[in-house]
Image 1 (cartoon, rainbow over the protein chains, first blue to last red):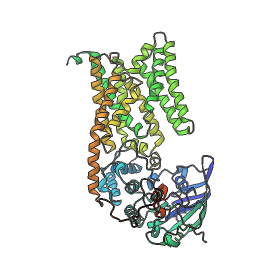
Image 2: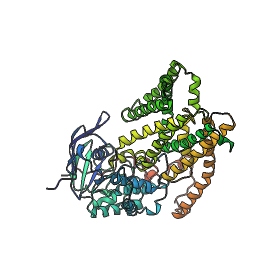
Image 3: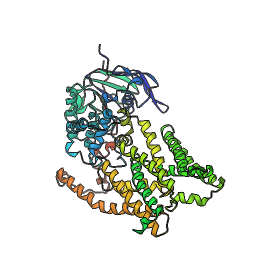
Image 4: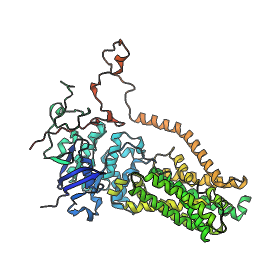
Length: 255
Length: 333
């Protein structure tokens, strides 16, 4: 059988003194689209940050493309989309400059060649931001900014995309663009692991959902079905929940 | 131009150009990483290096390079490992550098606080032939790093976590940047002085970014501003006997003010153009039903909160971004 792309077994991690992951298993096979779901504080962001090596594991094993994490050097195979922060950078940067940073996974310390500039241009076109290439990223909306971050990850032409909350704070139009982009990538054979707050417009793409609660996996299988009003098409889930809700709270808005 | 007839002025102007290029070229990365004050800290530490040069009888430029590079590396290590009390450790380094400098200069046989003053505020008349050679060498190193590795340093300073995941040697690049900043401080100390060197790293960048949209443009504009203010400040100091550091920094801040004043209408025009590109309705057209006149003031304060935008929707204010947790989970087999 083929090596899984991501293999996390018995993984524990702490932030400060607080244990955030308490022995989770997570396997992602080639071509799969896996969503990590869970409440705020359930450890889903920490889990993906551990997968990309940014949170050290206190115990457990991590293998990427069949190579133990310590020996893994082939970072160009991974495209990472971190959680978008609203803090503007200190110095302005254009959309093209930010996306080009993603290409450094291939060029490393060398100079960019024609093929690299082509890859950046293609990535910008994929997310529909080619016409904004010369604009400052500070002038973009939240959704456009998220598209730029995804283009940055795609510029390295990765086999595995890892995305942390790609739909957070993204307007409806951009959500659609992102879903289309992702569909194209998946059709091209890209493996995807993404943290989601809710399945939303990505639902049809997702092969498997892994649900975390309090740092443990509580569900690994087909994506959970939305219930009640949450199943209505176009439902925007914007109201706050109680923390440990295993049952969705109904606001009675539409009843 | 009688001013070019003097050897010391030729040396001073050459040093000024090199400082005008290198200080903003390094400073832009520090500003991008929100460490604008780091140059100031290195300047304090370099003072100990200068005094060490007097004490040991070697050229203070070289001892300052050594000591400030050590200090910059120490600051970088504190940034990595020090979490809670990092600011205190930095403060210790700043004050230790200053105090060490004054202590050592007074211990050295032919040194006094007067020697230090020329390093604190800069002095064009005392730039020696040896200084100029050292400054040229060091400036070449700084330019090679800051311009040659600009894509990589940009990525590291813009989003460090992402840069690590691309496989860039982020630690090496960070250390290289710290050492380059230290070298720049010593390049600049003869012209602008250690207390004001940080201003020349930060102010041209701050001025340039008022009017630019991209990083490369900001870098080029900041270097342009840097060269203009160091050259004109040095010339001014020749005619009016003031320390060049002071005139250069005051000029730089004046440039910042002028660009800020000019850029405001420019930004407004840009915003208007962006508005035209993304047409939307002029004003809200929805008639809100029930425009009743309220009996008391409290009745209008809270229109039905049923529309329920989560408090955490922030600037994005997009759908599906409430402050709470939003996942529906039916724990099933």
